[in-house]
Length: 136
Image 1 (cartoon, rainbow, N blue to C red):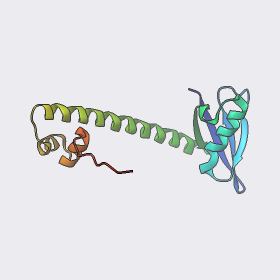
Image 2 (spheres, one colour):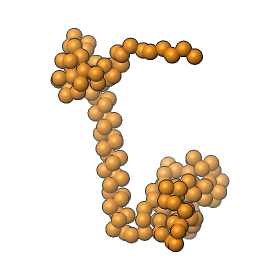
Image 3 (cartoon, rainbow, N blue to C red):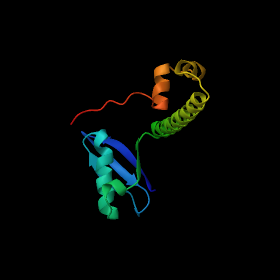
Image 4 (cartoon, one colour):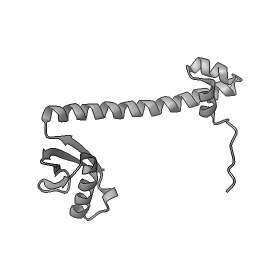
């Protein structure tokens, strides 16, 4: 998947956005009134340049024009991605272990004590809660 780096620089009441990445022979430029709208503006710009749908553009990483802050942001984002990956892995492993313990006859409270989670969490992990039906 393509990845684009966007440098955001404050310019009056706007953010000036410089876009670099695959398919662009030179930087492309756009602007956004608010920084939380920058990705949307960049996606629209790249969709026009690359003749694709905005959702198919790829990854967009927005950083400020201050290099030391940009490096810190990139590092922080990587740590957050790593944490998300580890949290997902922990959930998968915890669910698997809870199932194995349940298969061996352990009660929810015992499984919770061994895994360091509440017995309610064990119920969610094992998806053994009663299902509620909603009439339409």
